[in-house]
Length: 131
Image (cartoon, rainbow, N blue to C red; front, side, top):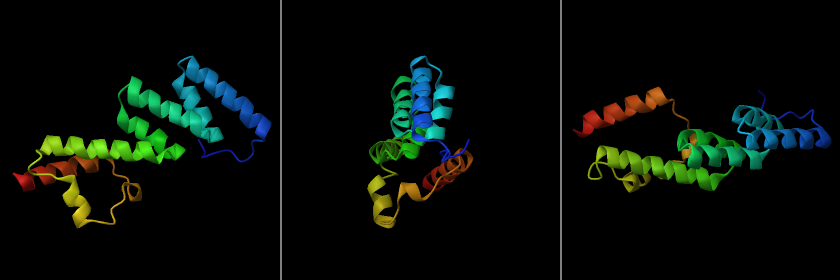
């Protein structure tokens, strides 16, 4: 589905948003997602993010909705949680998030997206290197 449909007039957009909200309230998250993306309805995207973050406990799905909505505070929070989880998994003595910031001061999590396969390979390489 496209980013947002510029062909929608305000009345059409408002009607679609009402339909998306009804779908969300009925638990039809796929339909709500489709409508919220089509209308670029940021509040709806944030609600979907909250649903996946807190109800379903799927932060990586939530991340996408927060990112699409431009909710930087939540994007940063999830990124920090991922770094902390990685540090726990690798061992705090081997991985320190502050060392990444020191080595790469211009690192911004929004500047890149990593496919899960590549992320797993990178973790394997780091683990072998640190062992």
